[in-house]
Length: 410
Image (cartoon, rainbow, N blue to C red):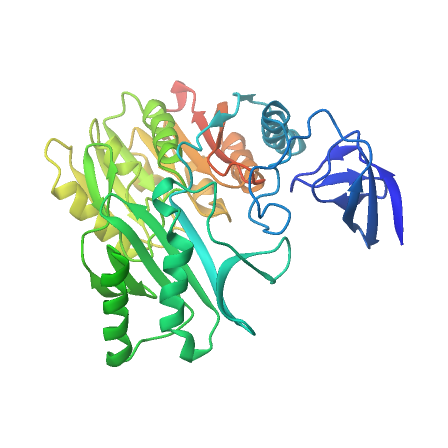
């Protein structure tokens, strides 16, 4: 049975929050909404008193697809909400720091998308999942993607049809690179020789730069390259890349600025080198990363780029074997960009070190605050935090925090 509730706030996941609390997607503070409750969550039936901050979503799949949750929010309200997510998280952790205004880093759109491919009664379908469910929403295009990715749902569908006999649910990652579209399929398992030939033919027909399965290259027709500062990197198959090109450039610019004047920098959780390759234009860099293909790609890019300072690489699991103070103390600055789980073990070793500057990049405000608390307890001062919005229309926000240790400790 439907009931009316008044929306009081905007929650951390983009839901409107009513009494109870009750979480209602696609609603805004001050609105009166007709909803159907399901425990603490509710389904929106109608908005009876729209907020002045409500705008018309531009995507035809918005109320079906769960990828975006805030296209109905005006830009100024949206920016204030996202900035507030960071401020509130730090406040709850007892951390006082300047939080700069939200930096819009959407640029020309997402340069990587992951599609889900599933068999349906009507045949193979490709798309995204509905909000907080495993129901597939079939799509023909994604409006928040970079223009090069606009045909990618059709391309992913064509490849999925070649793999349909396995009857397995597939995840198909497509990345826009300077060499063309790079596609990696997950969930199928190894392909036999006959299937590989079929996939090679598909890659030729679809003009893919590269096609791989679980990181195993089926065919590479052109190197899938991306620029990183002066360097040109060949992306490892299925490798991680920041969601937007402008997002990467923005994060890297903040990191390079934080490390200004440093002669020796350690880049921890370095990935394929978005920070290390740019830092090496000014400083000697040690890049530490567990993912060996990413580290090898970084190394090849560094070696083939004239004018860079020395870049050393070290494959290492920093969760189990963080760099120790004796190893850290030879660096003028340390950069760390861990996964969503944060870098608690490494933060504890940094807190015991004498490193003057730490630039901490994070995709999760909660784990950033936890690790920041460790560094602050070890004597660092958090000078500022800059939130970066490369995941526009989602509740995700990137952060770059600049920590300095008083010079007396050096």
